[in-house]
Image (cartoon, rainbow, N blue to C red; front, side, top):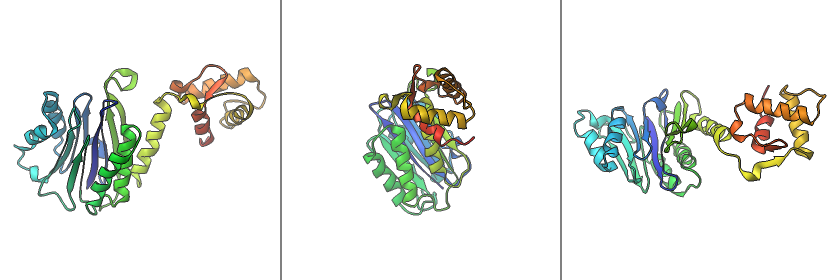
Length: 281
């Protein structure tokens, strides 16, 4: 009742998994990854020991195929398991036990493994594979595009409930203290992939660096719109000057945790202004 794609970006040295299921909190069960080592998605009647054990084997230099063989060989219920892996070099491997409910299967290619069970048909896995290979952008962008394409091609035959995205890179976590670069979950939602994409965009807004082309001077129309939004959001009253405007903007940025996009006095990241326009009181 799950479909997933595991991928690797050789340029950015990122490993990740995107997954959707008619299952509560799929992100708590399926994805495992470690920077410099690989990524694993374990599903169907999931054996959650597959993730840590496969990562241990790959950390010792085993390929994805070798790690797959080692984690499944002594499992008496491997016929009920499904798992996809990519190793440190992006080699993919996938396994679908003969006892997995139809439709079930997987595809591997350069830097990815896509798999699913209890699907409408094989089109879901094929769509994920094709989209991942053709999509542009970051690894997270490509994984989400592939997951969404899988859903549009049919998806889980029982419906939707939860989705998750996990991407790791060396020192990619908050403050550089761990490798958890992106770790987002939608545990219960009627359209979990769309919601996952929405909060991924928020992740970018909060933590991605500002794009130079989006930084603007606070004057003219930008100043008018910013003043209007800060008044609407109750950070500023109608009687104000430039000093109060900048103080209100600083208060807003620090309240909303947008410090990563804070600019020097007299400038603003227009992505923040755009977010303001859609924010309710």
